[in-house]
Each structure stands twice: as C-alpha cells, then as structure tokens.
Amino acid sequence: MSGAADSGAWTRVTDASAWTATGNGGAELITRRLGAAQIAALAEAVQATEALPPEEVTRAHFSAPELTQLMQAVQHDIVHGRGATLLSGISLQQFTEAEFTRIYVGLGQHLGTPAIQSPRGDKIGYVQHEPNPDNRGYLMDTELGPHTDFHEILSLATIQTAVSGGISGMTSSAAVFNAVLDERPDLLAVLTEGYYFPDGSDAEGGSGTTDYKVPIFSIVDRHVSLYNYVLFVFAAAQSRGEEVPPKLVEALRFLKQVCARPEFTISFEMQPGEMVFWHNFKVLHSRTGFQNSATQKRRLLRLWLNAHEHRPMAKGYLELARLMDHHHVRGKSLASYSTELLRDTYAALAG
Image (cartoon, rainbow, N blue to C red):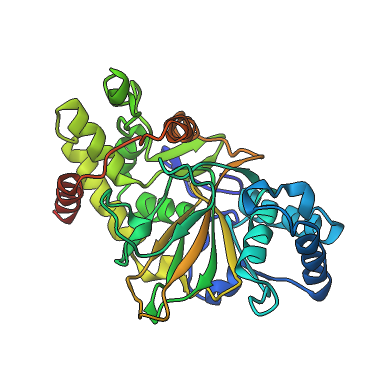
C-alpha cells in the first residue's frame, strides 16, 4: 500500500486506488474521451477487419499508434491507478453493432486475452434479460450489489440502454478496506484468512472445493485486493457440509454494508458506444434493476480478460479464473447457482 501510514497490524491505503465518489465528479473520475485521430484510426481498423468475425479480431488489427497509446494509458489506469477507465466518444451512428463489437474486442486485447464466460463457450458475452434457468446475474433485470467476478480484467460495452434503470456503479476495493480498518479492524483477521471456494472438482470425483482458503481481502506486497463474490463462500460450505464460520458471516455482512454506502460508489448510465474496463479485484461493480419495453431492451457486450500484466494477489485469485477457464472449455460450470443457495446466502447476509 504505497504511501500509506501504519495503523496497528494493518496499513491504510493512500494511493490513487483508494478513491471515493465524494467530490470527484462521478464518472468523470474515470472517463477518457476519444479524439478525432483515435476515431479515425478505429474507422480504418474496422474497414480492414470487415471480413473477420469479432472472435477472430486480435490486438494487432487495432494497433495504430493512436490506439496503442490510448490502451497503454488505460492499462496504466487499471493496473497502477484508480483501477477503472470509461472510454467515451464512439458513436453507434458511425459504426454498426458488428463493427462496434470488433472495435471492442480489438481494444480489449491490449489488456488481456479473452476468456470463455460460460459453458456456452462465449468469449463475447451479452448482458441482457433473457430466460435464465442457471440464475446467472448478468441475464437478470434485478439489482446487482457491489461485487467482483472472476477474471482479472473485466469490461462492458453498451449497445442499447433500458427504458429506465440499469445504472452502473464502481466502488474502490481499497476505500472499502480503509473503512473496515477504521471502523471494524477486528474483522480483518477473518477477512484476510478467507474461506474455501468451489473448484468444480465434484463433477470429476473431487471434494468440490479448494484445499486452501482464499482471502476475501488479499494483501500482497502492500497491494490490497478484494474477492467479493459471497456466493462462492456459501457454495463451498454447502459442498463441505458445514456452516460458514459465524465471525466470517459477521464480517461479510459488514463488508456488504460498507460497499453499499453511496459515498463509495460512482454511479453512471453507460450510453451506446461507451465501454468501461476495470480491474476486477481493485474495483467492485454493481447495477440497479432495470425495465425494458418491447422496442427498447438493455443490451451490453462483456469481456473477461486474462490480464497481460498481473497484480500481486493471494493464492486463489488467479487460480480460480484458470479453473473456470478449464471447466468452461469443457462445457461445465465451476459452481451451481441454485435457488436454494441464493436464498440461503442472501438470508445469512441480511442477518
């Protein structure tokens, strides 16, 4: 935690990653607007890749100097700075959805290699409301509170907004850590110890969980990261036939309350043509519920990226992403999102 001051056994984060929403101008804090030269470079790359499906687009196709410099700045923002960047200025009146998708994939690969996002085999995900027997949050229209997903770099790009709602939120993991340190330092021991996570091995004759605990807060080389995907904790406990430790449940409840405080979250409605990239373990993301109509339906593209430049993090943060990749290639899931699991998790966190 560079530039931080000691406070007992833990250290406050004081670098650029520990931002709050208060006084920072909302999404302006993380926005980069593309200029005319960058848009022109995108148009040239779009024309050059006209015959390619988006899945075959590479970083090299979108490597004009203007675009390389842009994405180098984005990478610095994500890895060494605030942890998130919103790119604005691309018009879907200039580019078709197919062209925009190629742009998105080409720019994203400056940051990492696209991962398969589900047993469907999709490297380009579609975040939209649709029938969803597996209870996946990105296919629902309900609110999603501040959380992390699984791969190191995440991204969304908007094609169409909802009639109402669907407001995105970004929350600094380091700022949340500072609040826990200030108000409930007694919870940090159990949060840095963590708990077992699902590893998908039950489908192959294994125990179904890791044989080591994955920290909720990772502190490695003075870097604070947060793995806030609470369903994994309760799914692992279910697989192990045990209860989540009461002190950890207490800590997760408090963590949920802190993450939900308005002063920690930048809220913004992504417009068509905008895309946002962020470090999954430095920045939590959220979304309000939304309403579609017959003619206007919220539709976003999504990338999960195995990063080119890694952040120092505890064991499990990257390993679980690799396990998920392993299972998705085989058309399987790392964990089941049963209605019972969802109900029990939400009930436990509500107290």
